[in-house]
Image 1: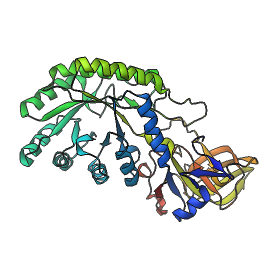
Image 2: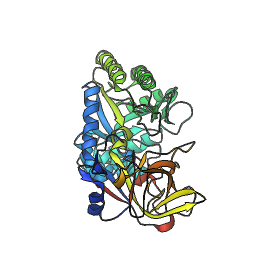
Image 3: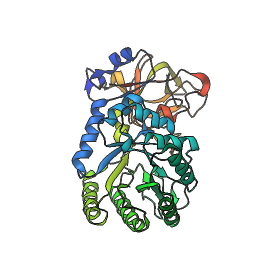
Image 4: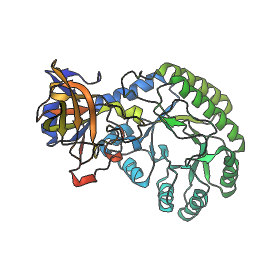
Length: 401
């Protein structure tokens, strides 16, 4: 991909040619995340969106501690989805005042941990409220809460819909006034609303429409709130291109749309900070998955490059993490990236299943045993979203370079 230069025929990641980087890591397979690309993506967003809009990193996309530590210093806040992620964020030095905790099945101890840590809880069920009230009373600390709203609309063109219709996420719009009344009656520290309509969207007009509808819904619900709205998370949904023919998301109309929302909020919700929550968009294009070719086989005319990596480390790249019809992620032979001699080959892993497929009949540089295969767009939903224990192969290594 264009974000990675080629030097002397080799892909360069974080200033390191791929063969040297593999030697430095000491093993394959590995994930490599380029800190320069991460910094550039945050800067790009800062330049495209209004300064008043806060950027939060949804660390479910990539919870590698070193990466979270880097992101904590670049963005305005961290969004977590478990007590385990909360620990990583706090250890990384993220400001508890700017950490929010979402998820549809928070256990009671997790809710107590959130109150003790002083982070904002995105309430997704009426069940959570008395638990938070008990923690507030026992700990003598405010239970900071925002209500996650399941809206009555969906994000059009979204790869994964997170709101609209029946969903396990958030409180249905019609239930929210009851929750707000409960929060006010019991004295929880109400701060605002969280709305997340969907993810992996490449259509700016759809994202703008969802942001407008989310803002208008939050503005209406604010009339029932026990105190002024200080926090308004409009979600994310920004997609990255994975497959041929996909166009990069145009940030310009999104920035203009958010500028209009910021202007409205200054009058209608004057204490509200507008937040955009992004995961994949920050990290997806800044990561590579690298595996070594351990065998080259020809079966009835079809070339197979068998590597030491596969779906147990890179489930999304194998097509088994949300794809309806399997498509290839961008792939190359990283130490032969400048080669002109090419062939049609499939890249497979060592697992005893035909699902272990990283590239299906792609035009690739001609590869031999010992070469390095790189899967692009691998910075999000990698090791933590893959079944690493399957068939007992070694765990994957991650590096930030």
